[in-house]
Length: 185
Image (tube, rainbow, N blue to C red; front, side, top):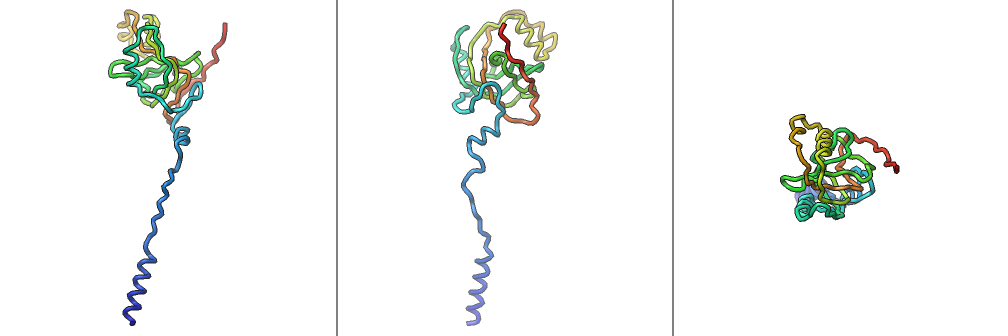
């Protein structure tokens, strides 16, 4: 009897010392909170839903003629930013081409140190002819060398995008210029 009592006591002690694991299946944050935490907003308020990938936008551009436009929301990566103000960016849309993105009414700028960050843009995609003088100006803004600028000798058909709102992947210390409101003259 003494042995049976010892076995029961040992089994009870073993069960009582077992660590209980309590798994909570609810996420720490919901999708809306992730979006708020993950992006910084510029221009008109937009959300991250229903954005197409930049590569798909590239295929749309290929089928456009100069002057064609398309209202769209796109997700891509900032390839290059205007180092003076952040007043334009370039976003790759395929292996060889990038869209040149400006901001509606010069109403907002993106971080000058935002290169390689994810961006979601809402606005109008279009194909246009950019004059040589404007291409030179943009090359100077980008800090291109005199040799690279000298290579610009003619107008160029460009993939363009006029954004009215943008979300940029959140990061520490974004370097953003405050835009001056557009004035009517």
